[in-house]
Length: 170
Ligand SMILES: [Cu+2]
Image: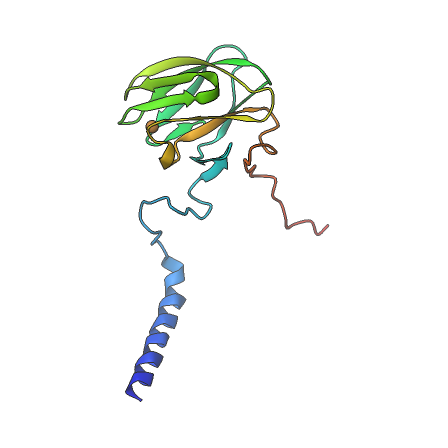
């Protein structure tokens, strides 16, 4: 009898908490990125879970700047013409050492905090090529080279912006 009262009281409290808590729900679970429900900016790029900081077309002439930070590449996906050679200017703006590594192209460049480095990469003929930081790949520090216009279909990259879904009522 006593226990039933307690349970009812508890569930009333829960209801009350749920009712007024929704307006000010700023408790987003701390700083871990274990399961970011869409807002955290993680996506699977070329089969690698990566912290997404945008897609950019590479420069036709000149260098394309890529920022290395703790712990992401920005831009994260570089798009160019199939087979195009691209010079990347890598800038480590983080507080720890990072690397720019592409296994299939024999590239493995270590960059100290505040330093810059240049690498020449090749946009794949089709699909995507994964690059990553060998120190922080498991933290989602990865990205990809992709052929312009093909990134939506290949390698499991999710292309946002094309999901309209609703609104076709006309
Ligand atoms: Cu790193």
